[in-house]
Image (tube, rainbow, N blue to C red; front, side, top):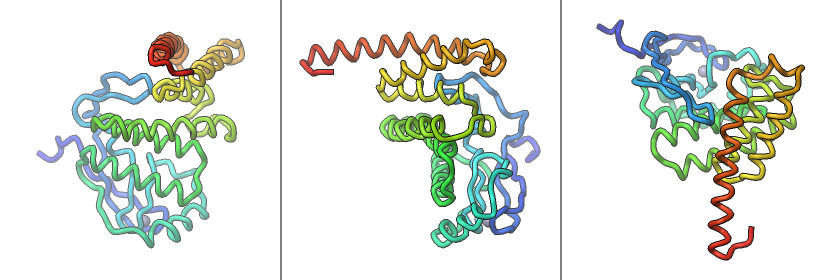
Length: 243
Ligand SMILES: [Zn+2]
């Protein structure tokens, strides 16, 4: 009854080495979306499609999140060949993946992004994916490390890139800086970016541009960030620390 398996293999031609390879995909009808974390991590019941978003060529090590390679150039593919492939030990990423394999896959994507000198928006996405994977694995220390990196890359994205980039718009970037900042205890920065989002999101010309639900989410997270900052300050005062 292989047709009922939630994960099946799809084929594609590698855009870097041009060889044909297979990679695991989740059948759309097997995906059970249950909700999302406040940092927009989708939560699923059963098979987790997030484990399969990193597509990796077993022959040359080319790796990317999603299937849209249209923004990559010939330079990007030659960077894969000169930087990634010489260090690549052949590994297959077809069939079902567990969280450990998903972490390995996203780390290969991160290595590709580094080799290609990708824009900050790609690094922020890679680092968020890794933070989410470590959260699923229950490793909060490593999750924190990747959240710190994502926090920096989202700020670079906002300052240096022409937004929107793909599906990532400026409002979502502001939200992510606010929310990831809150999660790593940078409350002042977090509140500053949430305030910026609320201010800009309320401008009449931005009415239709803000993703649905993002403003309500931001207002809710502002209250949580403020409460956490107060608790943090009270704790520091009790310990005689200066904030
Ligand atoms: Zn390849």
